[in-house]
Length: 349
Image (tube, rainbow, N blue to C red; front, side):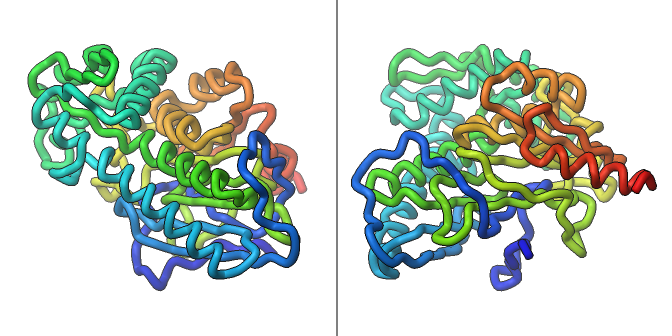
């Protein structure tokens, strides 16, 4: 039976709400694989759990030996750590922290430029529901101050990108990439492993997950946890992971109030936490897109959020409202099972 991985050994809660948990299982077509395949005979699954970016990171690699798998994982972790040094606004030495402090960079690393460009695109796509310049508001809320003045600093359109030159046009602006960079880092980790010839891998970072290939005897499988069952975790559903990535966002592990009315996701247009959804899961070809869209859905809400996803090729989503209604897009892989669960809950079965 599929089970949620235990995290007790690290004694840390998840940062993310609707937990996506890796479970052995599911046929996954490894599209776009490059490099020499390293497996021609017997294989083992090499697993590593680390604390990185303030979250629990899990890596699984199907390798010909423990030694080769460990070497590949070390190289992957080195790359992930390097990227954290660019994107983590909490670290004074991080490139993003320097951008926030100085208001501009004349020679920004390509990775930061790429993620900021993608962030601006999602700002446009969601009409401002996704806005990485929300950091001043979030900081004000965390400190207990009403963010009236901070709200004036929020506008993704005032991020100026000119080649490798970055500028935050308005004085006092600041960027957080917490809603997109984690997915980007997961994608780069998968790229490192694939470039070394490993085509059966699964990486999860605090609710952002991407898999290619499959486990030796089963496909990769994931489970969606009930966002209101924190003490006794239970799955709303589990299903074979389609080719690509999954990401979750929600209201509970980083709540600032007991009733979860204020938490770490902020509607950038209003300066308050969105009040409709408890969690959102998005499936997409790459984790960077699943990450940004799951955050966006929390802000957009059930109707507008799912309508947006239905328009995006290759993207599916599931949302859970605060009163525990479950809704999903037409192509979500577990929709049949969810309909059975919903009827059972309503006493129809």
